Length: 401
Image 1 (cartoon, rainbow, N blue to C red):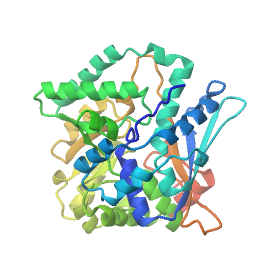
Image 2 (image 1 turned 90 degrees about the vertical axis):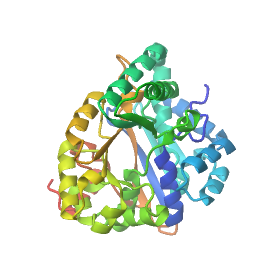
Image 3 (image 1 turned 60 degrees about the vertical axis):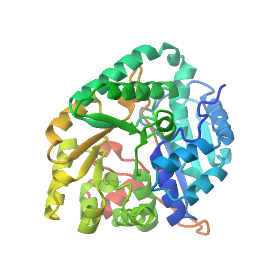
């Protein structure tokens, strides 16, 4: 089978920015990740074997000078030493364990040094999503001409409504061609229209390069989860914000706050952090309810919330984004990161409800044991991790069960 991933930067920006922070701050940390299919999908026979082949093909993917030159121009906040690391980086199939039980359920685990495993997550999810549609024959039904028209219409509606938005859809895309179709159509639409909103870019670094767009993204829950596993969840956000400050010195200033819920984050979000970070990302809970909490917190610190960016990325589609824009404009600087609704919205096709989460961590390879961690967020349905670990973290954080 042809390789699904052929470009090194066919990946989300936040994986590269976090990788850089990990090397600088946690160079000896080891981790484990686990694949979660929230729909408990039965995969076709032999799917695990095909996935192993695709992971092995990643070993042939290298970053190019063109990709490095682009990132240097557009991602000036990334220190130059990191590109030397990327030039020498090689994917390693031995870090990935793939299995499939008798019923067809898929299991995938990563284990190794954090800096070596962190660049696997998005690529493997994108492979699983596209491979599923290839093996089941669904990909043959994709009408990309119609998809381009529908994508342009989505962009038109968002731009006319005043939404500032970007593509966040690499992980669960219908295919690489689907994501490229969206990005190309939305850029062309944004060029034609002179509306109050705008399409600002994509989380996918390769397609940002190909279409001369801004790569968008900062960090993910993974960073806070790993720190919580090493040092405990109460101060994990505080430590993560300090790590980000040390690495990027005020750049990449949108913090993803909901790993352990608003209350815990708010207790860690002191005035110095609130002034340094340009804004926050809402990725769970009721969007407008979370905005109200954010406004209240900024006001308590004598900061005008209307001067702060709030990025909404919680299961958005065009209608939800427009509704939020109407309510949020003037209260903050709203923007929107939209994923699956952009890159996997074919009629009659069910997007894969899949994630890969960091589950275990140890500070250095010399430690004889791992510590478990989990993600809670503002939605109980998005809790991920061993149930006993989830209960322990809820107790530590004084969150009712």
